[in-house]
Image 1 (cartoon, rainbow, N blue to C red):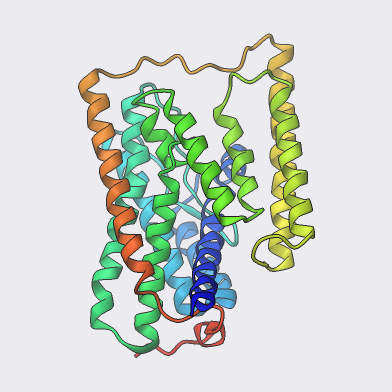
Image 2 (cartoon, helix red, strand yellow):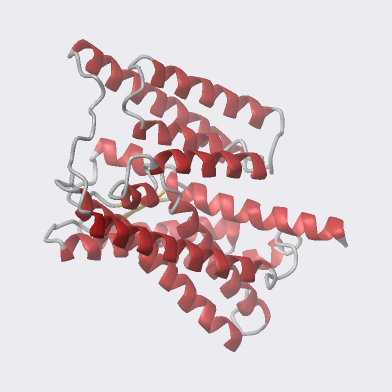
Length: 330
């Protein structure tokens, strides 16, 4: 029984990691390219539909639809927050197997950035809780899918609240104090060791962008070392197996990010730029306390919900993969 529970928990972690990787890995790359800046609503709808179909091939059609819905609600939280602050932005663009992205401007003050950053996890958590509220009124395979969608939705938003850039948690806590990103590093380190998944090293490469005080030549080398380590561990079979094309994609993204750091930091070095230090003023103590309360409140709520969900998840995801790929809604 203990081995079955361990296998089941690993299955859930693997499922959540797959969704989390889909959600996060492309944000920096697509945002840097700016190729879809003037997206119209039709592009959002079409890209959502394509993503749902492609996710459904590997995860099951209804789970694919649910995952895209969770991503959409999260991104709309950012968009609504942006528009509340007077910023115009197009709808999210979905990139199959890479995630969803919006194009946010540079913010003049920390309070506004925190407000926009908090909107995604807040709306995303509310969406996942709404899905969970529906679960008791379903049964059979439908109940299984609804609970899994809610679980992955909570997981995605909780993971995204890690207080380090480019996570939304980093955008919120930068209004509280610069020291918070070191807390985020500690949380990410514990999570990496606990899960033992090489793909998490890709998130480490992304997070290097939040440490602009590094000696300029150091960041590209760290990114390269992390990328090579990730590829080596995947090749040696560490962590839960994933499709070969996802592994190749992870390695390609690591190479692209390393190249971006190399080009960016080389240009900074030539221009005598010490590292683009964020010199924006911090808000007042009352505003900092407000964001700390909002942040911790959402983290505690999401943690409590996901802890409860783990005890109610269906049977082993891997053993039911065939049923999940062609479920019948009841």
